[in-house]
Length: 272
Image (cartoon, rainbow, N blue to C red):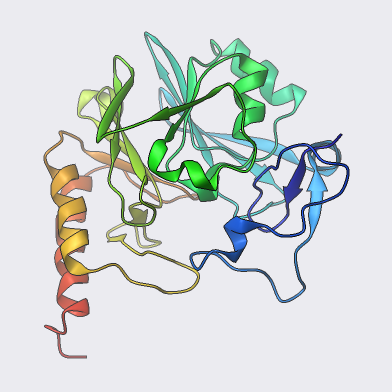
């Protein structure tokens, strides 16, 4: 039986003869069901009309993105380290070409997810490469395709490779996480943020929201806590969830001023 995919958010469901009645990810207040209603597809159909593109962001960091766009249109990041490679966040399309390219680059030692909006076909990736898929236990209830490859980590940090540590920030989701890559940015460190910390289009500021499409803000105290956690780490660059959403120098300073700007506006300390 097929594993159906939600066309809006790209999350994959447990096998079933018929499409799901509803998508709990889209029906959550942080996402939405389109006016046209919920639609479903399968991975085999996606392979027929889409392909993955590759872009080098720095020598050991590659971005994968599906064209034409599918679902939320996030990108996945492939981080290469001496101890193995990590796929950060997921895109729905996993095809033979992508598998061949990743294997030629040394394969992957694991997959790690920032939050449920990018779970997509994470079990498919874990099974294809025979590797663990790291998901924070606080978001376990959002998993729509259970699989033995899933590793539910708890607490505030988890080292998935000697050079990469996951940090639970919360905010957007209870288990929302970022990855701290110590070898990134030429050894100065990099943060892979998904949209737990949203790199904004101007690439000078970072956004913080409970829901981006539905415009639900986070409390200032929560944003200050999240920023302080990240500013305690050593890093220079920050790579977000979407195409051209990265700040390659001065990322820590951008986070600090972004948190101050956000909190000032939400607290009513700034005149419109």
